[in-house]
Image 1 (cartoon, rainbow, N blue to C red):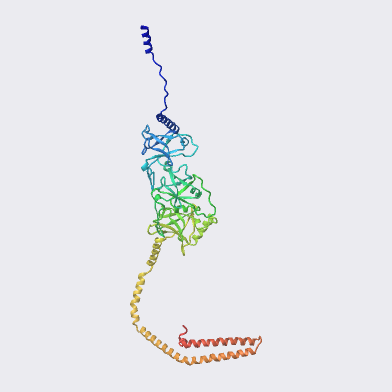
Image 2: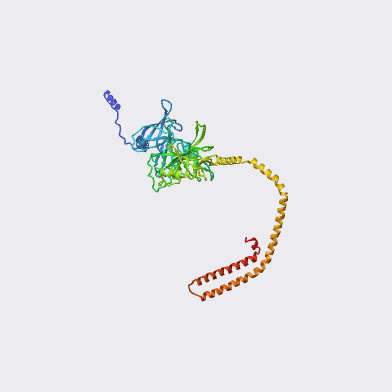
Length: 561
């Protein structure tokens, strides 16, 4: 009984075998699976698009924000700022940037970075778009072929020339910079065709300043080896014969300065070769100075002035008949200690090419021509160029009846004789006239005039003068009576003169009949022909005399008027 109970107890405690039930797939499992796939894909894409990490050093981090500021080129995002920190010396900032995956090729030692923010440079305003979007870091890949680089030094301002901008760079040499600054425009025929990139001061501050300019394409092909640049900064004011002239190239040139270039006037029909990139040109102070640079021949001359040279400075005009033929190079006072005299030496440079053909003019012929001018009375004098500004110039003029002078030389410098000119010349002529007047015996002349006037009344009241006046009056009366008698006596004569003229005409006709009947080339025939001619002339003269006496009968006494 107990065995059965134990067996039944064992059977009841043994586990029973579970049955297998098939489960169905639920759609809800798609959501986590899809999320896992998307997360994996994003992770892969983030890893695949992740570019190199670079560092850029700037002077300041103004406008930059970690996680927001982007690196752009032509409005395309190429990277994002990850972190901003200071350098160990606390003088600069280091910007850590994570670039995109496809930017490794442009990260070379030629690449440049700068921060784009609102800037005002003279009359130019840039970066206005960053007022709303915020500052960003711009990148210029530079030329191809550089080596890979991950540490960069950023620029504080945008470069004047970018790698994708065609054009050429040139160097200008100038003694003074004036108001020209970085970003100043470069003009060609009043069009902005480039800009000033910067300038370099000479070592020690002595020597010319080198100015670097960039000229865009295709305007850089207009530059020739003889092209001239000049400064157009500010406002140019001139006062001349045409009145007051004010020239302003542009508002930007007024505020930030500027330079301009132009093609020279060619005397020959041969164009100069094109100027290669990085050519060096001289920067002139004005367009007039640049135009004068086309004259290469110079004849050094000088003159000594014994009068005032106020207003005469270096650069003044040397003119002949009002046309510029040169310029003044130096004005100095020369003192002779031996005889205690002083005079002004004016040095000049004459430019024969202004009036002579440079191909036919040689140095010897120029000096011979200058000698011939001096022999004909050419003299140098100081003249006023403008009464309003007080400027003076040297005038070369030919003086009539000038004292003979010769052209001398001092150290191969031609010395031109001078004479006072302008207001000083007028004062010198007035002084000479006053000296002549002062030399006249005015006192003696006055005394003689007083004596003459004192005795004039006595002489006019003398009996001799009264008798002479009475005799003159009687003579005039007799002449009047004689004229009246002549008129009455001439009337019969005038009546007979026409008869005499008619008689001569009749004689002339008879003589012509005789001449016609008596032919032949004989002496009698020729004498008779001459007599007939004389009779004709006598008849005409008597007729003219009769007509004149009829109108002017008093001509027999008073003569023909």
